[in-house]
Image 1 (cartoon, one colour):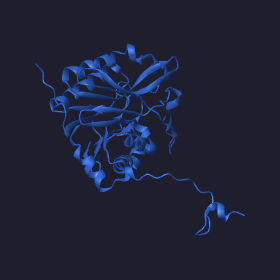
Image 2 (spheres, rainbow, N blue to C red; image 1 turned 30 degrees about the vertical axis):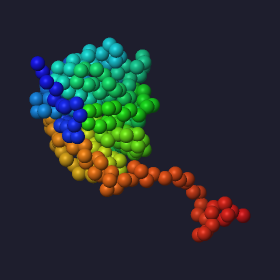
Image 3 (cartoon, one colour; image 1 turned 90 degrees about the vertical axis):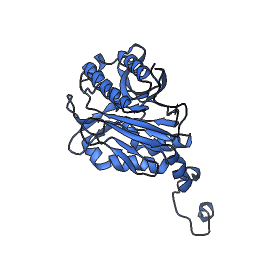
Image 4 (cartoon, rainbow, N blue to C red; image 1 turned 180 degrees about the vertical axis):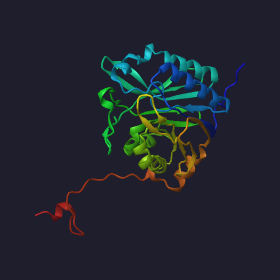
Length: 297
């Protein structure tokens, strides 16, 4: 009889971040991810997160659409559900392409419980449509349809706010998740090397600090068959902003112990989530002692 890796409730748990170099072969990517997920479970991980676009990194549109299936007819999802059930873990597929229309995919995160049930899905809201210095050009919205709903899921240890990669640059999303109860923020990613070197650590720590949340960010890394280069450096950041665990640039299973008591401790020291106030954007400055209305005329 296989026993679960986690008790029904616990203030602490062991998390694993899968840092991988996704290829152009779904079959190969499933094999690599499965091996790493098994390794994580063998090391005691109770929650395992994979990076953005776990199952396929593809720049050619024709091949991308041929190799991407709808959710209800997707062998990769069925495989991951069976794997979570076998290993008795919470398995968070950071994202994978899912066909939602003849000409559009969703960049979708999936959370699977230890019984193999799909308990949450999140479609990436913010599309990575940018041209970087040096000429790197990305237009995620050409192939993907943005989501329109933020998602919080219940884990045995706390509430998980689910996001993906470029969402990281939109702090209001994380504020909304934290105000709605999130204590852990998931940010699986496929950051470029250029933006990663400039912003990855700063933004991940900022999202943790300003919301007093744990941040768990599994990353893609290295040179991909499709021609992309990704930054790596998967991160676990504590609610006070300390980097608890960090990967380098090689594929790895990154393990960290998560103490949920750190959330309450950080929020007690700086309770900024309770200090939000309404405000307006002023178009001019009124003289001291007078309101804007009194100063007009």
